[in-house]
Image (tube, rainbow, N blue to C red; front, side, top):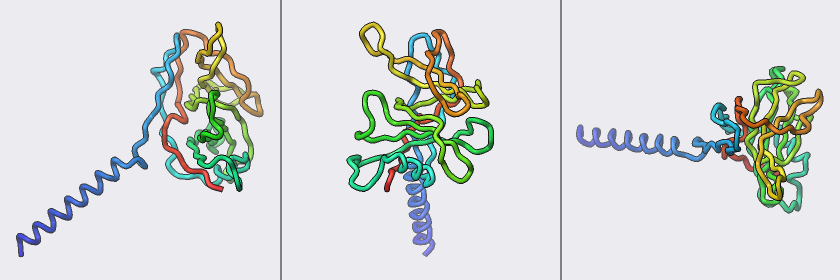
Amino acid sequence: MRMRSLLNRIASITILDIGLLAIMSSPAITQEIQRLTPSPGINIGRVQYLRAERVRDLQLEQALIRERFVEPNTAYTSVSYVYNKVDLNGDGNPEAIVSVLSPGVCGTGGCPTYIFRSNGRGYREKVYESLTYGKITIAPQKTSGWNNLIRLYRNWERDRWVFRYGILRFNGREYTGIRNLPRNSTITGRVALASNYEHSLQP
């Protein structure tokens, strides 16, 4: 009896350990961080990478659906999104920085990326909309009370496309325009949209 009880306890512990190991190695928990793309003359080694939000945001999904990414008989058969919540203006309501991922909407210019302003009850106001290659850095410097943003973009130079980093500043209503980051600059801040953790977008 004692031997059988001991064997049962060992089996239970082994099963528990295996279960914990499976959870720890699950893709739902492990997130692959995508580092910033190197660019000549730009130091990218002093940033903090943010892990993507792991819980679906139904209010954010409604905002994306209003952008007509998902609707009946849509041609986009598989649409997903990755997002981070970051308070960009210090009002206590974090904005949603989100990138939509689908072969039907992404191309050589990147994927549709939005920043939605939150009023604490949902997302109605867009303060940024563009195609990007993901990985938006929230810089500590501010303009009009909002954090400056740094992102990668393509520029046509000397008969070829090259990748550069540019600065986005808030103009009082939205992030607009992009100015080239000077050479010998150091990027600092927190990098959003750096994770591969995606959520499926359903109508």
